[in-house]
Image (cartoon, rainbow, N blue to C red; front, side):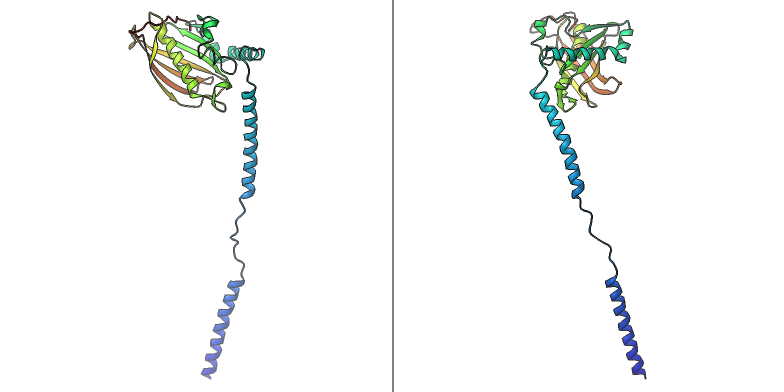
Length: 257
């Protein structure tokens, strides 16, 4: 009897194990197959490919068919730039302040002398430095240069080349320094620039330069410059030292350059 019960118990145990194994084997397992990434990748390729082609077509158009400085098309562009300039709040504020005197950049240069100069020659035109207006405050020894950067000065699409910005900073600092020197001329001895935010093309910027009157002398001038957009956002900070050389004679530049 005991042998019979033991045999029955053994069979029951085997049956239970087999049933559990079958249940575990036949039960649905979670799917480990992940969704294919290719549809999303192909979508991204199509989007960025289309954007790249559009940017390439526009760049090719500008490179192969640039606006010729002095042409009717260029003059029309400059006229539009000047109209927007006149309506800028920062310009209206400067014009309302009687302490600021407004002049054109290089006003005391003839057209013949402007052409070989970098900023008034090769960099001029609606696609370059489309506009430079200088506001000088003699009482505070402060100068504001309002500038329009055209797309021809881009270093990266829609962003102005840092070298172009540095060139305008150098001249803005120099304008304040040369107004300080009795001989009305001088050269850059040191220039430090910190780029804080992107400077975008086809926009207007104010280069505000302040002369350090306490440190400056008749032969050395220290000045600082801040570049801000039309909304007042700080984009660039700079400082410079300008000197009047002793060993060689420089031509007089004058007050309005």
